[in-house]
Length: 411
Image (tube, rainbow, N blue to C red; front, side, top):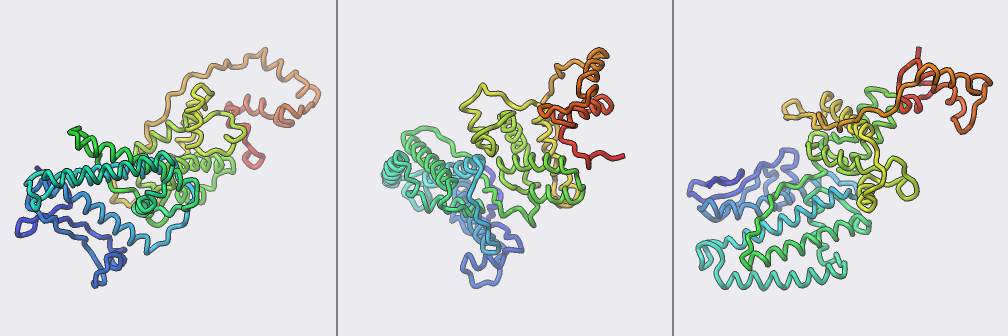
């Protein structure tokens, strides 16, 4: 068996965990841990065992404690702005982290230790005590879930937000929604823990290090990239609106994350969410964010959706911004990076519109718009005159011509 990364054996053969502290927060970590040293360059803790299996099990909660220390130190250096919203993706990620933490912690308890009467696993006494504690916690949590009472996990939710680097307004709807998601996962973890006591082979999910918003170094996020791209490229007003719209939808789903942290999975979930957008929105959907539109789609599965071409245009907008960011120093040259948007376009079907023939054009240009100078309001006024002409001479699509302004036309 191989020990996990970060687990070291000392000269006496006993395993311990260590983690390198980034130089910029070493002083803050010293203050957070209460040590007399001015700086802490390494976080270390003995695991009290020479057995590799035991070391792997005991290391997990220690590593999570290190994550909390690092998060608190980062928070002390930079006050995070209070936010009042979270995307569904962020809420689900935090709740899933809590479930994984609970299952891994239970697994660590069941492994026992050499101080117990059982060399491996739990003694009968500790097994009975573990079950009793779990049943009490499960009953209380199920009762709270039935009432929708998230206050029973108030401290846990606060700690989860701290670990993930989020400062969320406690009285916001997002806090209540997050509390509900965490409470559901808390009950599920306790039920699975009880099932383990009945012999059910329930595996612990992989406990990944939490993604902290504080890791967006020097503001190198997607929104910062959009701002830099716009300043460098000086795009037309129409193009800026389109690119901003695409980036806004991405941020609504995943948060304003660092460009370097974008993965293929982020792009895939973004593409799938875009496919749920209705082409025309009115009423409460007019200003709805992308997660809300995804939820609306679940209730209206047969409603019309935007086409593949529009989805690809939005994907391309975010792609252009993040590629520009990579080429302009948002990601260090020594950091491996790939364009996660590459080859993620949807296949577009052949257009079902037939080209205009000569007879169609003769009829169009003999209409009152051209023959009598009429400018019908319903036809867009002057647009009724210019759009057909521009389409005939430029060959551009209607969606490309309609947003144009006079300032966009140059000789």
